[in-house]
Length: 600
Image (cartoon, rainbow, N blue to C red):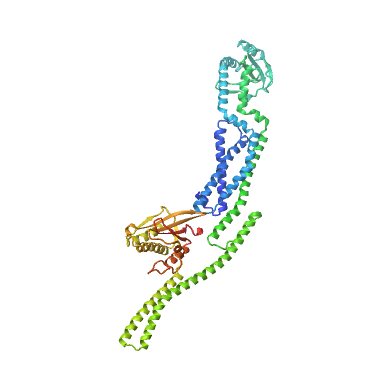
């Protein structure tokens, strides 16, 4: 699988993978056909095997497509990347529609049914025929031995001797093989023409049929006919030709033995089927079957690709839009419903961009309005004591108060003014920091060590139990370590302060920091959960907790801590939300994408 990843073009990589799947299906199908069907049957030529190969290849190919579809769906869920699983579904649909209706006709017309039935009963039939032939051979053995002894004597007499036909017949009479009811003698010239025969064979026996075997070193041949069965020896008759000496076998069972031998030969060689269909016709049918099968598979992939490509492209574009990219435009020229869908998508993206720009403008105005109102409220608080202190100094000065008392009033009032100016300075500084937060430098790194560092920091300064539940082998995430550590510190610090303000026994309180890998539609995310056993937040407070300058802390809260946390998480292409915890307090959930292309 790693070699496929070296191919950069996704489309080519899918085609290469499909080619290997198809090739593997062909190899497995041919292997099963050879091992389970053609094993021990050497009489089949390759042209007679093509239709059987297709029948065996087809289920393996369909199975491989199904397995590829299941694997592709699994990878989609694991990686969050859109892949071509729909192509396999469409390919299966085309294959079922194109091939399944023709399979019964193909099986019947290709004589495959008979072959499979033969295969099913092959062991019993073969054993029966072989056993019958063994009985026949044993019954012939005595006659073969007797004839061979006479043939050896005759051969020794013929060696290095020139003789006439009359002399040969005298020697045959001496050996008692002139009895034409039991024996056969034939003299032939070099062209195979009969010079003399005691029984007419009515056919020319080819010289290649005479072979040496386990029965004799002299070339011999057994002729099985429905009216006679002869065991023949062939002797050289130099220079005139050759001599055939034979003996009749199974005289009383000729027809029965002939039937057994004939059936065995027909069964082994499939002569009946081969005689009806010439080899050229079988080759043409086999090639046509293979071509039609390959044609169906090829165009199934092509049609599936033409349908699936726009869908996959549209799904990828949708994922980009959900990630915030509003400059997506599909330049696909499709007809029919798919063309309408793509045009509608492009128009939707344009409308969405326009609406989003308008919404962003409204949100910015509303946000600055909210900030202005809160800043006005916060600035108003220190201005009141400043005004009162100034008026107090002015009154004492006009009243021409005792210098010592005036000095006391001035010192006291200026101290108040200075303190309130510092409050204003602090507010302006925080506002500036919130407006000019640094841009994060995102580096792919491990998350759990950052969480562990933050936990150790607070475990040393509080009696509250801080527990960790980290997912093992968590994938690396794109983070700015300094900024994200500040986010985790802020959330744990808020949890600690919330529990401490509840005035409960701190040793019985706990904070749990956990991490895990979650899978959503078309993407994977890492979740960080920080929950506590504090007093929690009401539904109304949860809606405002991330607003700038809104704080639930009565004395020392500036109201921008969680706003900074939210902005940092957004800069990390993530998302943060708050829920009720089963511990009784709050549960803050941070969701980060595994890659920047899977931004939430």
